[in-house]
Image (cartoon, rainbow, N blue to C red; front, side):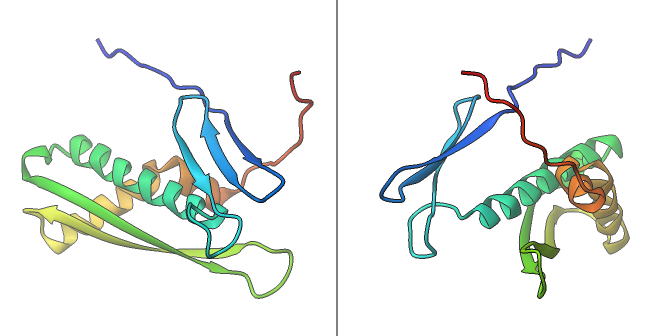
Length: 140
């Protein structure tokens, strides 16, 4: 029997008067938020790229298990670069994902793993198909 454990899904961000920002997940994970390009921490766009890269590496691992190739798998790295749209509104127009899958796989098998990862990845599927952004009344 599989024991499914869930995590809280809320993440907050804060910024003080001098521009020091941070993001904090209810799970306890946190990171500095860069207000300027020269600041320490992640920019919001880097966090978005990181979410996609992180989801894709985890999705490759799921695909490896699904296909029964665990013994042949060594590691995976994914680099994600975004391209901003040239027109308004301000947004990302696209993402480029570079996969490095280590292990005993043919080029066709690597492509199969990449395709499976894209099908599995919740973040990538959200970017591809969109999501509604809405404001809700905060709990005080």
